[in-house]
Length: 167
Image (cartoon, rainbow, N blue to C red; front, side, top):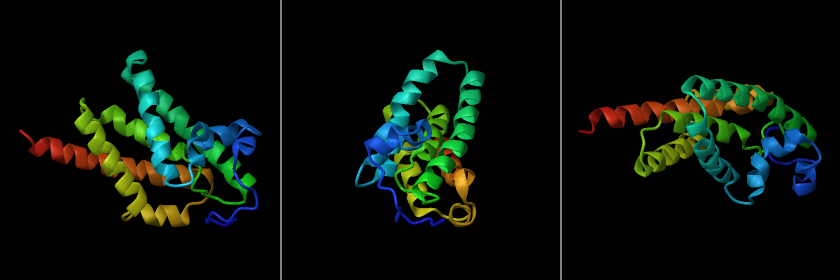
């Protein structure tokens, strides 16, 4: 199975609605964006977070994130196999789940959310070590999901450092 976006199947709305895993892995259609699908997928995390955060306790929120990550392993693996591409750029459930995690720990305020978004996209695109290692060497659904979890970790580390030095 290849990791490039040269797939035998062209993802479109028909493909997304052919299986629930495809719809979820493509972020309810946000991954169909022709340019920057990962950025569009990451944006989906905002309304999801805004909806869930006031309705769930912190413990329940973490359990939902664990569930979403676990389901993501399956949906991304299923969709990757259907496309013939292990990590198609349109599969954005990994960005969504990882960024919802980031938002959960981000200080309140639109400035922090914007900074968190910029940092997460930076780390997801640049893939500094060890993110690139896992992106290149872990395949299937777990590989798709895990590298974005690391990008979330880098983002949260940067936010914690920045918050600690600000008055």
